[in-house]
Image (cartoon, rainbow, N blue to C red; front, side, top):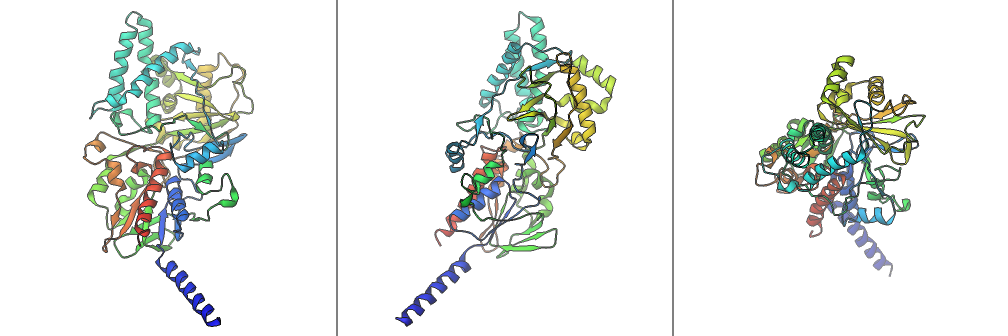
Length: 490
């Protein structure tokens, strides 16, 4: 009997040893939603020898939730647009973690008067009609040319007997331009292809996180929410900026700028398209194949600026404002720059302020376009002074008690070398290929022994849901599944 126990114990130890020896070593570059999704899926399927190397001093990537004012604000991704049938989305719904966001766009004229809401709604509906039939856009045409053509035709027909309204509607195209650059994260709407492969999820409700921040989804991914006792023990190493990935040997070697190095059987790269554009020539050894390099160069990414302002006095409260939209006449723009200087031109790229949901003392400003790099170089005082000029000009007649914000919060997505932008978009050039650029970017690479060594995830590798967090999650799951498909047959 004693001998039998010894034999069984030896066999058990041998089994455990063999399993540990055979378990693949996996490194994931980046602790954003794609990286954490991949690690979580692997861990849930008993592949646990996984390390995530993160260049920042925090997890989340382009999800960056920070306490500001009375609640959490999101410096990066803010509204969740759903994800159809994913387990994460089901958990979010079942746990009642989000709620739909109500957007009511109230606009003010640069003369200082509030614009009739019915007029604004009518023009925004025209824009929405064009957006909904974007599938009809011609190949090889930019968003700028497409919208200008369709919008101009619609307003000429609708306001052919009202010259004053036709002129106003024509000028409103500048508001649409600003919103489009923010929507696509581009510096110019002339950079974006009108024809695209992007698909909206079935339930796109612009969900907010009830003041908890988008970081909540990271807790769901790691199973820390809704039950913290079930949190996955993922190994995430912060402040690990990768210098070079040598991927063509039996093992992949990942060297970091701090001198540390790691060996792995497989590496999943989840860095942003902006980082790939900036570093693909030096980040990989050997170099990436031409098809993948071309995809990186052809896809587009730029940046949006989001700035939060804390006001001790909620001077807008009595009017129950849901937003402060800014409509400039061309003449008022010229006079504004003549009076305050061309260095204030960035203010003309500011289309709207929103009161932050569940954070009543905070206003949020969105800025897009070519001014974003300049905005990131401005001091907080310069931004506050500029914002006060705009607020007083547009709403100073209605609100006599506008106060200066006492706090400001922002994040420089474009100049940060760990991001170099916010989210990707399709260009005309990226669509001139049989296989989509996102698909080409997502294709794994094999080493000398024909083993799949280098895999790619992140929103820019999603052919239909690029530019979104749920799209990033899908790619993390996709790459984890590639590896699971290998090892479940071993």
